[in-house]
Image 1 (cartoon, rainbow over the protein chains, first blue to last red):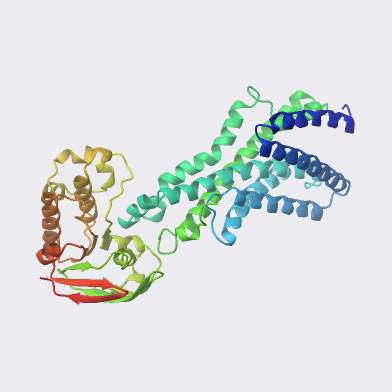
Image 2 (tube, rainbow over the protein chains, first blue to last red):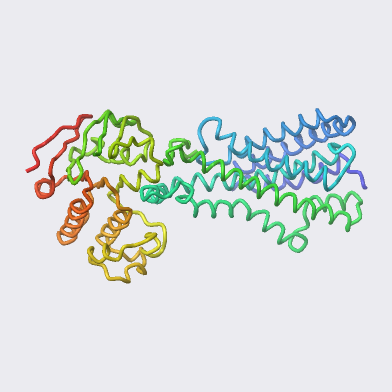
Length: 264
Length: 198
């Protein structure tokens, strides 16, 4: 693989700086945001590179687990931040984090132990990137679905209650919303799978090819990842919608919109 | 038969009263007094505390969906979730719809093309199809013309008489109270009091 020098990256950074300068006059705020984001990318990725280097050198289950938990904690925070009307209290964080934990961790373990079959199974070179890709995509699905769920419950509160009044179960009163919400959580990964290889060359596969891997081997890994991601995002979304719907109603099957924060 | 003891909610002061079988009680009071909140609490739609007993059975012993079929609440404005009228009736009684002045093919009508009078009469039919024992009606005739008002009043009083149901009817119209009420209650400043009906 051709090694990239600091100079190479600086030349690429010039493109971002050029974009910032060009747009500074029309969108001054956006230009600043762009530069800050670019800087964050450089710093965050450099740091994670160093951390991964240390982690790869010391393949210890405890360190891998710790890293995984940090990733989960950050992803949980991100899901919460993307909600316009999030659940109040610890539920705002908990529903997303628990759903991601159930789906991403289960799928990652399944892939590492059953499909890849490395020794030891938690070898960080496989475990961390795999979990990272799973969490990233599951996070997208779950945050989309939860946002849609709470927003729809709010907008359609009178229709939901109209059904409760007639003696419908809470489950039935939100069945239509539930279907749409689940769909919205799964659409990104369905689209990604449908377009893979035709419209877009997925990032992981491209990276492996750049690193000198055989394209046919890189493709196999990409297919594996796509399948894992769809399972992770799908089961994660299912779990999040299930927990979210349960939290929307209480034990007397009342619609509890007071458990949602005001729109942020 | 329908007993309410110290029913309280976050914005609802403690209220007690009772309704007898076959009785139509009108409830009035200034806006903001909590009439709608009271009806919602009785139907167990908002968090509330206190004792509500129907025919000797306390509310907490009855599953919420069953309770709401027995103690039926009709909001001032009806909501519809499917495209056609019929989809809102699991097992529609044709006689009920005929009494309300609808042709048999009403089940195929598009909800969005209904007039406000038709909507309200159908919402009433939708509720009565569950055969409730207590009716909680929140200004059911507020937006209706005299002809529709008469139809709704006739249907409700007839239902109460035949089924020996109890009814709490929120209204602001004094002439409606004197026309319908066996008793009249007045809710204001957290107190419920008896008024002369006629």
